[in-house]
Length: 118
Image (cartoon, rainbow, N blue to C red; front, side):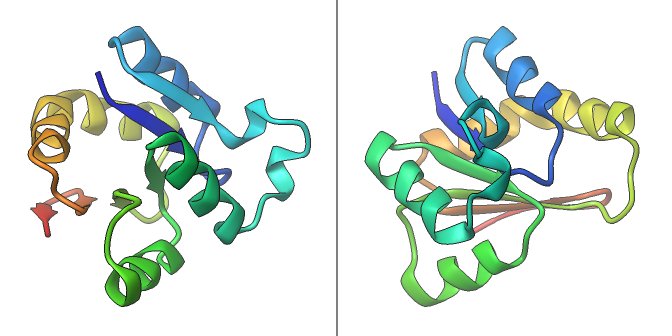
């Protein structure tokens, strides 16, 4: 089981999906005023609770490149995509994604054509 925090710009449905797959997943909207959280506060929660940040915000990539992990980051690079299509991509690759993070990979970048880990 992995622990995730899903960033504000992604659907809460993603956290529910991950929870249904046996992971501990929360969405920032589950917190009071969570939609107002800045990136640094999300990083702080991820560090305190050992959570992997799932985001489409490239600022988390910059944070990773300058400071490394923790926290670990799953960066989604899909551009404009409907939630159902995003969920289908994640469901198809979830075992590979979780496998990378279980191997202590710090960053996974996931797009329509690639799943790259660092």
